[in-house]
Image (cartoon, rainbow, N blue to C red):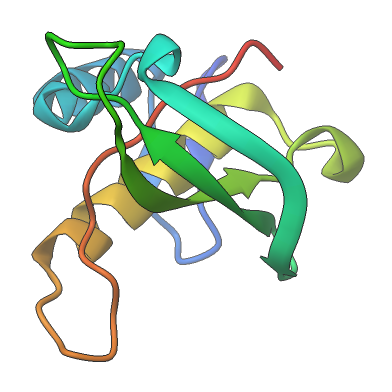
Length: 117
């Protein structure tokens, strides 16, 4: 039986809310404030759990300067009845794995943002 508030991932890992908060705090260096992103409406791809769009990442201290073109993956949460803690666990796992990858056919991981929805 699970403790109240804990979640178990598909691979059997049990996470408590305080563990999720601690893991997100470790990933803070990758956090991008939404104000730095100009996300285009047009989708350039999609998959089972996400939509891929083009965006512009504005420079940190010069928001009026031209930004860098980046790709943004927006996780689909609302259409899947996903528990917020489970969505956070998915985000944490993806950020950790992707940030460690280094391959010519994989885009480098720059960071993540948290939207209002």
